[in-house]
Image 1 (cartoon, rainbow, N blue to C red):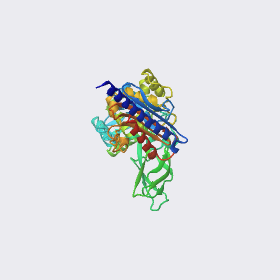
Image 2 (cartoon, rainbow, N blue to C red):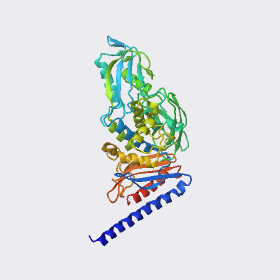
Image 3 (tube, one colour):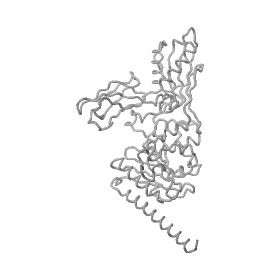
Length: 474
């Protein structure tokens, strides 16, 4: 190639790059000044993965709430520290002795922090029904047909005070506000079955929970709204309180349900197992119970159950944004570093040692539900750049236009089947962070966050898509 032609090619390339840079910069400025963000804040960072060079940014060092994008920190750290093959364990054990088919002692379900116990979310994982069947057969193998002690759920593997700082009361009774305990069961959630009224504006009937929770009662009212109005009903509940309050509206359908958070998973696990055993003919002479205290009696192991691998759990977390699973990993990281209450600080220290700029980071939970969490777009991109070689981590992320929370994002654009990212949203917060390959074939990572925006989530999400479509032109 002649020297002049070569120089022209370089100049055209630089001009094109400057043009794309200006287009992206203008789009970011336009979004920042949009009426949706008149009282709000925007942060953006676009980084070259191999070099860590920032290609474009807007307020990338500002402290922002990133909602469920916070799960990226949790899953990345867990994969790096605990390893992809880590599994939680749950034990079934008894105290006392077995005489003539009678257990003269207690039956203990000893939690090991497994947030997947009895969950239907994982292929090959025991369902709630299968779990009880397994343990019934274990008791049968020992000839036990009567329990003179108690069936006790042991939740002391994690702290009893399970609610992280910054969780608001409006979240606590709803399924997405299920905290992680030492013993968890069936995603720590239940269905509240409802029958809408025949007239708009009248009260819906509460007729059952599924599974049954006879110790739980409800006050308040849920009103019937027109068809297609969606689920706008909420449950206000608190840990270890068995009276919940309901409010809001549900659409006029033949039947409907909303999901709530179990107020006491260790007790609920023991209660459900006892109910199952009694239906099978096992006599239980005392009510089910729970404890968070250390068991000070000799125990005899009956069964050990292992959870799915951490790699499988991390994929479920990032693909479908499951708060409970993220909280379990967060607390397990705290235990790994010998202090559950300092998990957030230890995670920040971990990434600081990896030369991530941690100023502006504050982690109070693992899921991003805490209103006190903060991150910066720059730190998030630094971490993502480092995790770009971890194939297990990359496989956990939703794919634009294809899977998880990005199924309807970027469809029929260059982003489809290209961009991989975690979404985040809560009232006034929207975030998206991950990877894409640009039109020149270069690997990029990015983070885009808006706080205190006004208007509809769908509108803001569409504007994020428009920004990223300009970013891939870089």
